[in-house]
Length: 420
Image (tube, rainbow, N blue to C red; front, side, top):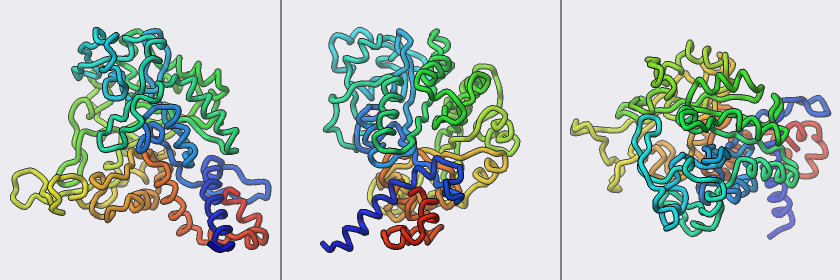
């Protein structure tokens, strides 16, 4: 291996990890050059493509892979402590079902109108939660780390992010989601003020903090807007994707649950109209739409039986049998309303990629970056980072000049504007 190759590889690695600083800084640098606003890479539940989701180890890996933000979903314990779990029902993400001492805690609950059976975080104290270990809920992903990692509190996540920011020299952000706020409020365990308390303790409850708070409901974001200047994001859900590529709506994914409770007839699609987006802008800073709202995919139904056909002949029918339709106007409409757009969720598995992407997840990221999204949620931080570099290199060919020390010295001001 030549010295020149080693130098180039080292420079490339430095460039890849320098760019997030530019992504999180809208200010001019000390030379007066405008720093490049790259799309944010948000680690969805941590490095959940590789390790059990919502664990300190998963968040740490995502940061090592270059995430700009890590996302802890928040639910409450019985004693009012915010912990990082995807849902109040912890059956599929912990080993609670194998713990005989908790066998009698299994029960039925109604979450946002849906009856669920299992074990629920609100029936456990934090001390009991700490006896459990996380597991990988996606059967197609690596199961070898099951049972090794604790369930972290929000306070522990914030401490990790602070420590990793100091270690890496990067300003790493947190992107917490308040999970099922109406459900928690009805249990007497409201999430909002507890979240703001933890952010305040960590010095992150201010406008300039690298924090976004997200929710699928509206009223709790409106409440938060009255209590904090931290950036807020309205999540936009959907039930499924029709054969023609349009998003379908069915409870509980058709509307914010607080809308359902108070009889508000509007749906998530109504929130994505220009008028709906302008309303969101009165209490939030951005939207987090399910990505088919931005670019959907259609399928073929040759025999008109209502079901999509197995176009690629591999047996199962999935996203790989679908083709993209034209992008919607949501990104442009949201930007016109002054909102950032952070779609979810990007994954590497072949069955999750439309046929247009030729089995390469990088192509999906590039398509959405080119559409103009301001960031995105991913289970695979490293793939999102690679695609972002390629996107920026195409958009700013002069980035290539920053890959050699000699040219960097000649163009110091310009290279620094890219995040060096």
